[in-house]
Image (cartoon, rainbow, N blue to C red):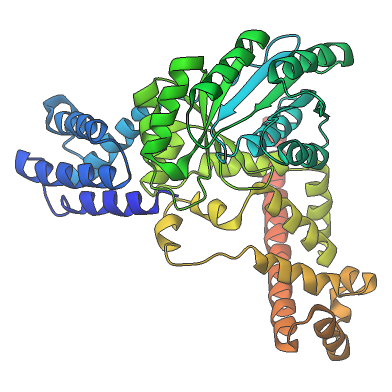
Length: 450
């Protein structure tokens, strides 16, 4: 995501390396490279020109030039601020108030509307404690209703469908009536898409919106299509005046043009970003955090939030107790892998750590590596998982045959697991000793006061 743009912007900032002061000459060279980087990322030339003119003005502006920072650092800060403004400035939430709250999903075929509808339902159900109902209004695409049904079963959210009807207006109105009578507080209407913008499509989506009067209308954009996606977003907005944009497929080889241009062009905020096929791969769109990612600064805030979503206080307390006793076993390790998987793909998570984006530029993270670890553990008996110390050579050979790996790999994994377990035990003991010492000092101070 944004790898090429990040590299080109980094090269642009390098033109200021070694410079002691900001001058028109060195800024001009940097600005030229930044504009090239944006155009290469499929950002409209006018937007790129306006953006760089603003950056140049602020870089040369007397009151904004800080003597304590280098020209390179100053340029990074200005570009970060302007990228944040370009993408909307601040995060904008979704409106699902109503009885029920109705969300209309629109977009071209293949943009990821149906998958996003499922992700949104899961997000509202788990994060907002809502009771959503999915509505299958794509009556044209083969298997569209089946796809939504499968997604609904996967996330345990009901799907309203009328196989016999080919009228999206009728289906959506009946779905809202059904939601009212069955206690659903959010209705998510997945509409049909086309391969291109056409009059028939626009008339249909406009009629559906007029009939159901949604609290929120979201336009789903395939970020892989760059500037074309922005043009499509503009055409849709002129007809249905939607409330926000959803960027999908940000985990692909996207150049970033859509994310950087759509707010400027359409004037509507980006509300969500989708980064994969899993139902968990959905993020609220924060312009400031995305600007940090583009500039290779990582996104610790989002990483912490993802971890907190999967954090189980009781489970953490149970694990801490086992680690203190040096009893952390393979079953515990499996539960940690499960939590990591829920947070998203490994490479995306690592890129949220500052500096890791550049460090991992040529490193291929394969989530299947976790599958190999799971296969090894699943090839163990329950007794072996609970008691790692019983794994002798004959047991290791049996495990190797069971998971289709080499004995050397089994030895390597068990050695790494043992080292990790010892380190965790050592860390908790040190924390415990520190806590005990602090408690003793606190008691001593209390006695002296008395």
